[in-house]
Image 1 (cartoon, one colour):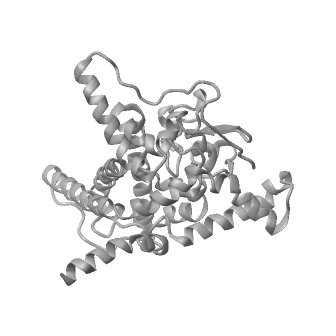
Image 2 (cartoon, one colour; image 1 turned 60 degrees about the vertical axis):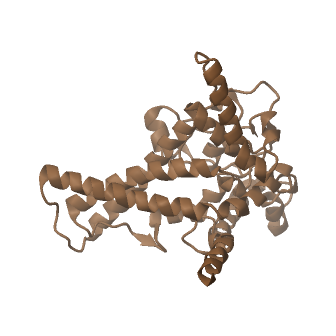
Image 3 (cartoon, one colour; image 1 turned 60 degrees about the horizontal axis):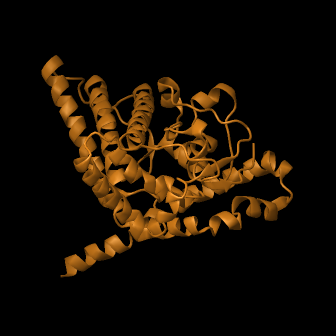
Length: 349
C-alpha cells in the first residue's frame, strides 16, 4: 500500500518536476532564458516599432493579455498539467526503444563486419562528432514523423489537437495528444538509436554527446533561446542563408498558418535543414501576417477532455466511413477558406 501511494505521489508531482528539472525543456530555467532572449530582441529591434518603451514596454510586448487570456490559451494551460501525468511514461518507453535500436544496430554491424572499435575514452573530435550527428538524426526523426502527421489522414486527426490552437503561447508546445507523442518519440528513437549504434561500432563506447544535465549541448542552446518562442506571437526571423539551416520562431509560426501558401511547410524542430533538403521549406519574411487554427473546427477542441477524446472519436468515425465507402479518400490538412482562423498580431524583426 505504501509503495502504491509513493508511486501515486510521484505521478501527481510530475508537473512540478517538469517545471523545475533542467533536463526537461519546459523547465522554468528555459522559460527565463526565453524571456531574456525576448528582452534582448525587444531592446535591439522590436522595441523601435513598439509604442511603449523600457521594462513596462517589454512586459506588455512579451505577455499581451489578449493572447495569454484567450480561451484557446486557457485550454493549453490546463492541458499542460493533464498531459504532464502521461508524458513521463511515453518518454521512458522512448528511451528504452532507443537503447533497443542501438543494440540491434550494433549486433547487425558486428555480424556483418566483425567486432567494432574497442571500448576506450573518446577524444574531443569524437565527442563533437557524436554531439552533432545525434542532433542531426534527432532532427530528421522529428521532421519525418511530423510529415507523417500531416499526410496520413489517421495521424492528422491526432495532430489536429496541436493545430487547433487559435493563439500561440509557449504552453501550446504541450498541446499534443499522447498518441502523437508515442509516434514522434518512437520514430526519433529509431533514428537516434541506429546512429548511436553506428558511432559506437566505429569509435567504441566512448562515443557520447557533450551534455549538461543529460541534455545535448546543442539542444541546450536551443532550449535557452528560441524553443519557447516557436509557439508565441513574437515574429523573430533569421537572416539570409541561415534561414535554410535554423528553424526560427517565425518558421514554426508559418507552419501553423492557415494561409494556403504555408500549408504543409516547415516541419523542423530546431533546424530547417531537412525542410530545405526535401523541398518543404518556407522562408518567412520580415513581416508576415498569419492566422492560426483549423478554422471553425478549432472550436470543437474547447476543453481538456475534448483534446484527449475527440481525435479518437474522429478516427472511429473515419473508420466507419471507410468501411461503408472504401473508395472515398480521407482528408489530410487542407487550406481554409478566406477569413477562417484567428488573426495573430505578430510584431518584430
